[in-house]
Image (cartoon, rainbow, N blue to C red):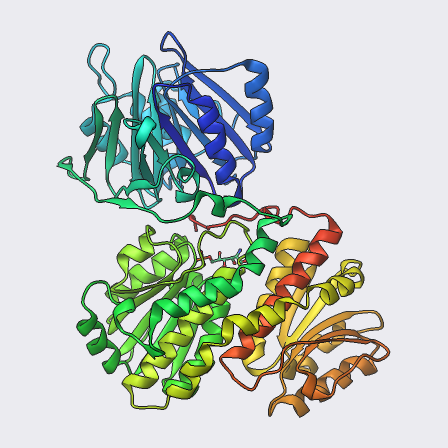
Length: 617
Ligand code: M6R
């Protein structure tokens, strides 16, 4: 969603701000802007609806220069994406700020401020923060006193990450509550520089060293250094982390889009994730602990049921895992969408492990679900996450980090298969803890990355099939058993990036309603496993065919299904292993979504209206 970038340096901040914004684009946004202090110390703002390249054009035409500076990509919530609603927001030329999050009491504050005579220039909730801060008493020539600013921020309800710039004061303030914010520390020739970013990806070209602000923190950055104050106003230090992420991981390489690059990175993402959880082929408890492996083992040995909670693609990973956990560990599993779970009053049975899954670790609903779970009497909370510096990673009791690396396509691909790999490890760990067989399945995991590569080799055939789907206006996905969540994920991917209406149903539900949609020419996509459900699925396929539906089947060659009138078949690498199957069928469906979208000319890496991490409810 929205992105924040700020630069405190002795050089012109504008190119660095624009570079930072370009790296935040993948989060999804619809306008952008920046503010700097010009030579004489006056505040200068530049804003533009549309893309960062539009802002770059304006900046070049304007020849704007200055330091320090703050910048923002806005994903519209309050008010349409216009120049006026774009951040930074300023008032009276004294103060400008950029904001991520939502101020829930903005209407009340706005009414009070209007009564006081404040004038508003935008429809945003953010503008009330500017007016509140502007009231803070300041000394002559000094900026906002940190403690006074914190007291003002204490009046805000909701969430915020903020970067603040003031006239005549070569200093930046950064504050957060409920929205992520990092401070990057310049190194080498850039020592003494500070960067503010809502996302690690934007820091990578400038520095690998950063610290994460905690909720309630306010950081004051100037030429003398960085001073951080916690929610109570005490001066604190926050640990400095050195990331090993390669700045080049932000590039598309030879691929046209991040999504395609990331689809092809899956063998590596799965390999790295599996390697993190296994030693000599044996699943380990240590990588799931937040410090004490023995405590982790003790917790895992007590688990009697699991409750998995997530959103979107991560929810689909949880649905797949429920099959594995039931089969291999013989543990009952419940799976919930986080936005639903967070408002329920769950009945928590004894010794239930709460598992939340999130690529970003910043999804608002998943975090709210986790916070609710912490109060609800679960045995423990466990997170599976791809972002070590995220709130989720810091708030769960047990944590496993997937090793997918930076994922920049809004459509999640490699993070999904890495989550599946992590959930396989969890299933085996729990099977082992419960004295159930795990060895043969663990041995097979070794071959998984190579088998994934086989699956990716289907790209050309998939590309050939994409043309007919691209011309459709509605696509039905069907699935059964283990491949039902994979089909659901295929439908989500297709709708996200191609904007085609794609729905998925359990094939057994066809006659209960969706069959009414099938008429000559309707496109139906089905992943087909060679297993005990095959005869059932064949019957469903006949039902579709009899009504003129045109099918694209991803099948195990041993099913005997072949191309025929109205049916196109793509052979997926055969497998009998229930751990392998979802990982072999998911990439072809991702490739299908990608190539259909490519034909339709959509904005594949930043689909309209969507954001990479959904940090507001
Ligand atoms: O970061 P998270 O895994 O918590 O994100 C959850 C969903 O927002 C995410 O998976 C979304 O559905 C993706 N755009 C799917 O491709």
